[in-house]
Amino acid sequence: MMAAGAALALALWLLLPPVEVAGAGPPPIQDGEFTFLLPAGRKQCFYQSAPANASLETEYQVIGGAGLDVDFTLESPQGVLLVSDSRKADGVHTVEPTEAGDYKLCFDNSFSTISEKLVFFELIFDSLQDDEEVESWAEAVEPEEMLDVKMEDIKESIETMRTRLERSIQMLTLLRAFEARDRNLQEGNLERVNFWSAVNVAVLLLVAVLQVCTVKRFFQDKRPVPT
Image 1 (cartoon, rainbow, N blue to C red):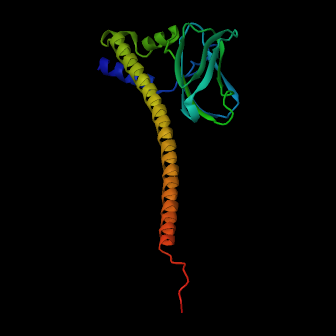
Image 2: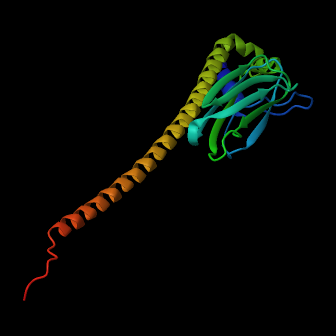
Image 3: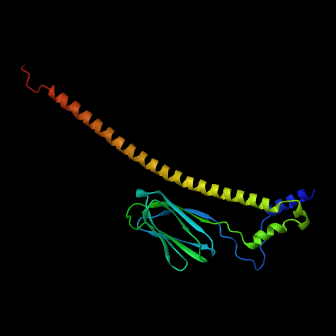
């Protein structure tokens, strides 16, 4: 019965939304992803807050547009240039440890005067737990009930499952970006194939008409017929 009560208390603690406590620290930074259209000859920047002593992984990919390339830069909150990519289709960069503040991510398409680019990027933070969050596990059940429940095993199993689920979500998001880029390439190739096929058909018809007219002129007798 004690083990069942502990499991029920733990399940309720996991399902209930967290309660904000006065004086507590800021909420944890969440992973994020974004897809946007970068016009030709333009530069667009984004700012992302990051906690101190964490790990930030930045991944971007050009999924649409001629050339499938873009310039990318990443600056620290102090304005130090950390990453500089020139005309690349994709890239993965990790900043560890991070500084507290706003990181600046810029995508530059100024080298292109005609083609706009469809860009996807994703920001992934490591799942660090604060001391208060770790201690809250022990507060989920009564001290005497902890004797019958291996809290450390439960915490380790749930943490492993959560990490694997987060990684699965990140991989699915990346696969969707690859699928979108491949689809855009296939649609562009299909349009070009259809266009040149129509041009070839038109040329064949024109040549056929010219050949018929030329052959008909060969058999025309323009000499006057005596009466």
